[in-house]
Image (cartoon, rainbow, N blue to C red; front, side, top):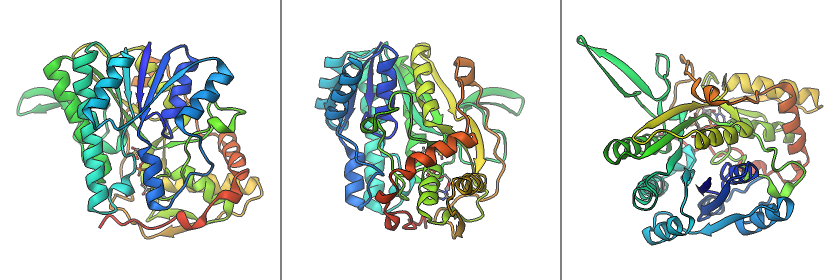
Length: 382
Ligand code: USQ
């Protein structure tokens, strides 16, 4: 397949590009380096330097003989979007091109506006471009488990049948996000569903939980191909942050009571899930939704694991419960269904002690580069 990856420079975008290329697909990536610019703007940086997209594609080609085409530009601009779609002629479009941080979206009015206009505007352009240039291509979009929030009932995979006053119908599962970023993902799903109904497009929306990890099959033994890995409060996900904190002796930043439970997955499983969704596409006129995670943990569960494995590795790891800067339930029911991707063939890489120890050992090689001052800034929701 000819696959166009939007957001190909990011934490997940670049590893996905290599993975799909390694599996025999023709891959083109697009990015405007928004993540890198937001990091510069906020004075935070990834754990290790990451070459730009042209350089990474050249390294990949040298190692594998496979080419990844690179397009640099802003997907909010229609002239750029139409040029890319007409030159690539994709069979499938994988859409990661969003501002991905909940805390960044809650910083101030300007970052809220950027999150809204970038995320909704790019999703709309992707939909318009697919209809105009490649109406048979599947759109695979990364949504988030955070769209559902933490309801006091089981979370289904995207849809809910409702029996009301003796009549039945099926609807998108109720969504109640807990940050502006997560709310833009809810809006994306609504946009997709409207145009799937109206224009008969085919789409898969992947409700992904927080991802952890660095190593994938494609970057092993080649540090220059590792992902853009953040550990700061704005752009780092919680387990990635805890691992870095443990390595440098910074007490683990558990927010509030630490009972916040989410569905987590290894970065290797993100790659599997998107590949399986691309290779076994939704039907025309179908919006298919999968819950993309492999196991659930509370923040306390993760902190306890990191303390235990850290001690095995000779690290001094402690926990510091901090007042929660976010507005979220700290003790709640959480039972989401997640069978759809297993049915497509996902073979999970669970968070075993070995996996966590390997990740810590890798981060230990970069401990001198860690900047403790960017770990906790307390971006408040209120
Ligand atoms: N948390 C802590 N301490 C920290 C950081 C986070 O206790 O130092 C807590 C948060 O309050 C939250 C949980 O850990 O309850 C997860 O936080 P996170 O920062 O790992 O995840 P989140 O902000 O929800 O966003 C991340 C990604 C986002 C993705 C989302 C999936 O940045 O792109 O959509 O995970 S989900 O969480 O399922 O919505």
